[in-house]
Image (cartoon, rainbow, N blue to C red; front, side, top):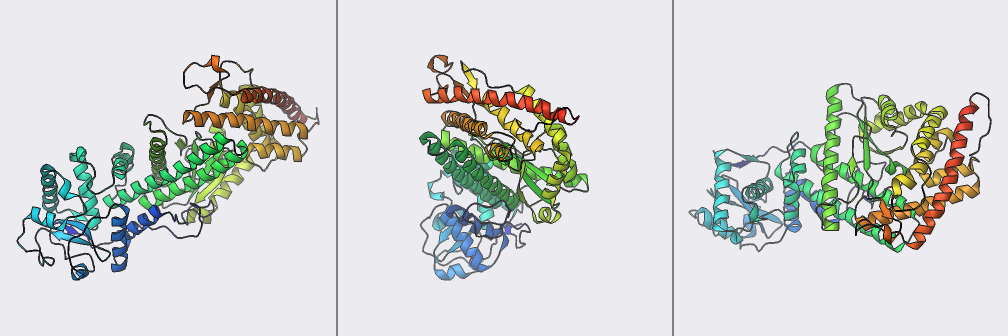
Length: 563
């Protein structure tokens, strides 16, 4: 039985809808934008190979294969040879490899040829044909053992009657099989970085429930690499801004949050292109610091799926898709981290968490679950949706149900819990934690005040401004709290850039260092934090009093309304 190429087109549509945004995307048009960077364009051309069998698209796709990898010297095959069988070489009878050749096409080589290409005798041996056609795989640079192994693999494909979607699918499959058996061989077709991604245990785990053809694996690996490169550039710009102090921390955090939202949507698009979307309506929210616009380099990229599922299998389908999104996020951040730090043991920020809300089968149940169990639904913002999710208004229903559950009493109860759990900042001494000892109390208290006072803002800085504007907070203290938040956020940014990962500890001065890598406050940072601690201590005391008198107001005991 002979190896052959399947004529049946792949049903999964991997070509994303087109748009015109110069950014990676925007939050209101999920999966409907186009990444115009050169690598991404080449990948889309390659994806076109899977879904369009026309001569024009095939030639463009094959040329993209050549451009995206490496250009090899071609043999002296005539243009006439390129026109046979729709521009992809003679009809396939047996095992096939391919090479880049003139005319924007890829020529197939055959072991048993019905009509051999011009200049090739019909009775050449296998090795002679491989050498004469000089395929894209660097056959001439491989050892005799590896050459023999390639031929054995081709024989196995033939005996097993393997079917491949196209000649690229066959060649990529061959490359990966060679790597698995002889990893020391290195790349014979696929770039080493792509192969490392494909062979990563996380990538292979992702394919257990929905196996991908070899070409689709390569496209996904290239997308992961491209997004890691893009986000790596964002991190470098972030580092530059932080080190040069070229903007206020508030501005830097809002800028970085915007970039990470674009990144999250791009990763979801990659998951959609590779695996298809769930058949049930889906809306995705971003929570926590991503919703507040206060993402630090080490922040979790908290994503939550909102769906309307009638059966358990529908919930499982959404859960499975989000797990794949999480795996792609993890792999992308891992690749980015290794490039930025050159230390494979360290991870650079954006630890993904796609299960922040859990999964319920309606927006209303999800809103109740997220508030009752994890209290994360208060800080949530729309990120993206499928057409079905938009049509069903899943995001709007979630926020409506959440707002009906959240009220003044709820906010006051949560505020009391936060004030009991996180006290005012302590005095500066020894090794300290900028997040837990300085930042958690004001950001979480402002989150709960948003419910008590009906604030529309999601960002902590803007929430303070709105409190002042509505008369709940005097302008002097409001300005001081904003300045304190900027000082504290600035130190946290410096810590993350210094360590190259999410680590929030610092030494107050040089004598307090416990390890050589400890971040030490500069004299101005020390002075600013000392001042900020006093401001937040005052703010904390005012909040305690406000929570008590506002709670008593229900019973007509006190009618005060200001913090």
